[in-house]
Image (cartoon, rainbow, N blue to C red; front, side):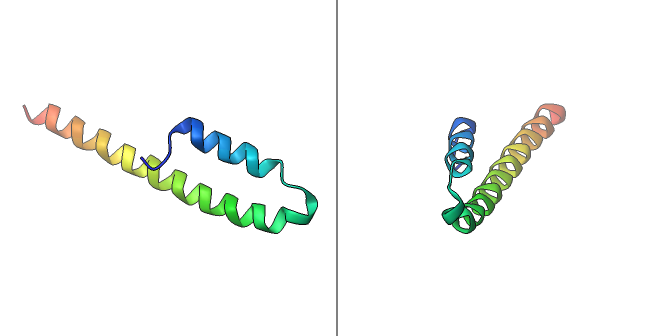
Amino acid sequence: MRFTWTEHLSAARTLGHAGQENSGTALALMGVALLLLLQDLSDNGQANSAATNVDQSC
């Protein structure tokens, strides 16, 4: 994982506090943060799936 769940939450909170003048930048950064979260969740899901498949083959 690139970030822990706590780090993902911290990034979301930080971006949520952006002022009106920085809302465009905050939205762009939130999009990047969401992509990273999706990749982390996907990687974690694939790792769990692989572990399950190994357990079932034994």
